[in-house]
Image (cartoon, rainbow, N blue to C red):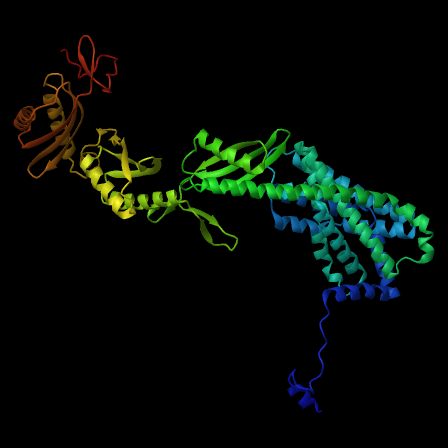
Length: 584
């Protein structure tokens, strides 16, 4: 077959050249290990030289290590993973571990001594520098990155072993040597060292122990893997190894340490798995219980085990602080699920989820696929959401009413919706009846009842209560403010000339050729239309223009044994009696 024919042949043609088959990953790993036995003598010399040079505790080594540990310390404090990766690339801690392993295998005491000094001396320098860093007074709460260094498990030991395998392979085989920076990132040797110093500075000695255990586990795992690979690659001769007893004696401390660390990390891993199951159970119960609370979402859960049970701290975002009785119900549900006594602490952040139609009883969260999703809500919360939507539509046509909140109360006779509004006056029962009928029709539930809870709103400026907006904010000519003041003073004077009548607010605005005046008065009796008409005629004669007066009268006065007084009227600056005080 010609070259052109071979090029034109498809993979399915009988004449097509065979393609190399991809090896399965176990075969690829085995092949990589077997390739170590074919390392050239020249490469042997280069690797040994690099290990001996990298294991020397020189001034440059300590400077580089100090810089990397400070970078790691800052990264752990601010919680920056990108900065932590940069610290791992700079750190020179891995080569001395390999030097210790090679020194133990070959019985090279000089290399072993210098590598140990470089490794643990450098670790002590890193701990000292980050300890001083932690003493600075402007750090906040521990970050998740720092906490992760203090909670090692068996998984961390396995990761260190795999990273050690890759590191030694990259050092020995020049074909994969460019991957060495990535291996340095994977081993992550200096973050635990930085965490030790920071924890000691913060007084967290248990956390410092956990970080030391993580560092020591990484060192032992890399040391053991490196020893095996050096043996396979032929970096250690039979004569250098010596007797099996001598080799065992040299590696005995490391083997015992690795065994103890494995046992401890296995126990930690079991505890971590137990905590994961507890976390899931606690979260499931809280999520189920909070589904009955409007616009309430679980933000975070922390817990700790003690001799008396489990303490749970639930961070909740909610528009209402739950009553202690409701917290007790949720606490009992947690205790029933876990089979242990539970103390529940709910840290409430007051929030309100808002959509284009107003607040919502949906329970939104950001899902793992990066989209905003909503958790299921209970039927009661769905009823509350539909009711709020209807209320928003009605209030939108009445600018003098502000909808504050809607609560649902379950009674034996049916659901009761408590609608809290803010308005300058209470709604009439007839309007409430029409709103209730509309809700029943829209919700399809004739048993729904409505209670309107009104909070009276009063707008007050430096001039007084706002009765006419134009009197406080309206644009006017230069003469109009003085005319307005005269009209208001005249109306105030003649209203207060009526027996036991106190004017609490008055506004006047120009309407056509005359004036429109509104006044709030307090009196032990309700003013009659004749009283108001008499004031209109008197004021009109005084100012020479027509005046229309409307009065909101309230029987809200303070009665003493001598006189009537207006409630809330300002006193004179000299502390005398109120200007509107009148004797009975």
